[in-house]
Image 1 (cartoon, one colour):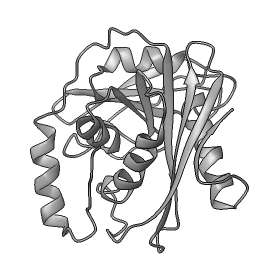
Image 2: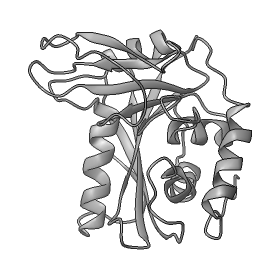
Image 3: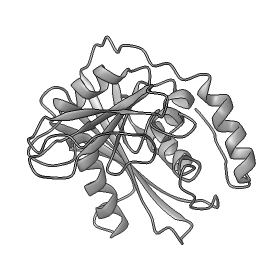
Length: 231
């Protein structure tokens, strides 16, 4: 079991950790099998120390939900853009440990290598858990891109200033804001987009993170209990 406590880290210390962990990130082709996929998300108030974390497990390619793992934790690391993993990773790892079946791919609501230090939450989690991960974010954190065409399925590359490919800006629904897809760990740029394409079912967000988002918000409101629940 991975035990992580980031509560007392300073931002300079967290930066060093990111730079060291970045050397362990592997952007390689995911070759399967892919029988289960999962989505991970967090719900919290940026001024609160309480974090609600959730992971929803789905069959693939049917995307039928199997169950969800939910935990509530107190975290002390501050809300700082570019360092959100240090708030979110510890409770997500606890939710991960509750899963009776681990997915072949985990889709995290956040970035993978599309990050100033190539160490978004999907990459951070992937390295710690030795797990194939993909980042699927609602907003750009880092990189340069041209707006994709308005039709569903359109995409454009997301790069750094030197032209290095970080991910794709993907129009998951016609005339709706795109999502930002980047590999986290043990996945690559084209493969991450291909998998995410198969997870779109009429909504802007891919099913794994959409369902995880719904689950953690219901959990936060007290509508569902903490722990693992099969569906």
